[in-house]
Length: 426
Image (cartoon, rainbow, N blue to C red):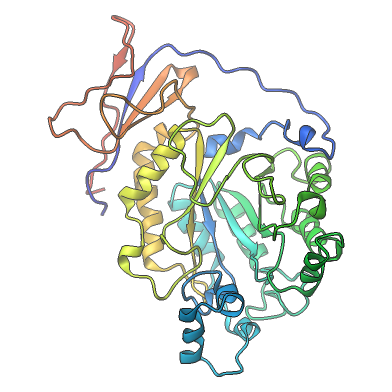
């Protein structure tokens, strides 16, 4: 059951201007000017809603944040230091969490079915976070990967197969460019990134490998470690990705390809974590955010009020799509591979809402106004070819009447109807 007072939508039949024609295909040079001119594959804007999955060795301590290792070992934040003192032997190292990351109950088919039920159209799995542990058997991450250690399974492959066999979702991968404590990265950093040992021997080989092996249609780069894009050879890699790779026609990328590239270069912009500007942007963007307000990875210490409610999540989705963005909603599975009940509930609740109201979300465009100036919490989307405008309102007015200030009705030509209403007993 879902609570009442979720957004309703009201389609308005209004004349709208046609969209400009798409640009033709081209070969891209390893320069930002050329790469930034690549048209974003159309499926991404149509999808509107995706699921982010933060899963790794950090899911074992499952305390505080997925940045556990950094906070404990580097910043030595007292609550993390005390957690280790209270629960583990004095000589326990972060690497010792590796064998405890068992994924014992990980069932890729079950995950795929939950994601399908959420109404999402794509997923993004953390193939490698800043800790460096890869969820596939990387030969460039000897003994610190899911095939050699812990699960002894290719997690990426299992989920890829399940997603493609059981759902209509697009499969995507997150990849951290840098690693907190990798000796080669630290040596390069000490040289002010004049040395390039780490990207040449680790980052780039792994990026080419996961693209060729798993063919992700979203490649979500993250974590530059303060290094510029030239250190990572980002433009060279992206030119290959767009010109030669097996996903060259369908892959979408974000904007985190080196220090200074965020919200400036790449396929779509993320700008910051939990980015929700509340207004229209001139470039396609994504709001990557978490159901857990304070962490991307699973936290055993999370309380019920640390999780966003379904009303808050729907509000994020509606506002994001009305302003031209996609919502990437994050969950954090447990170390044994289960999706906790609170995450599953939110995913299924969102799916129930989208079954009723998805017409106003999927494959829509922004309208000339993103929200209403007369009635608060009313957001607009449109379908120009069908001459439809959707007004989604998050709260029913206390007066019992809904007044819309933005639509300009033409007598005899404009129709308005209450298209759908969410039933709390669905």
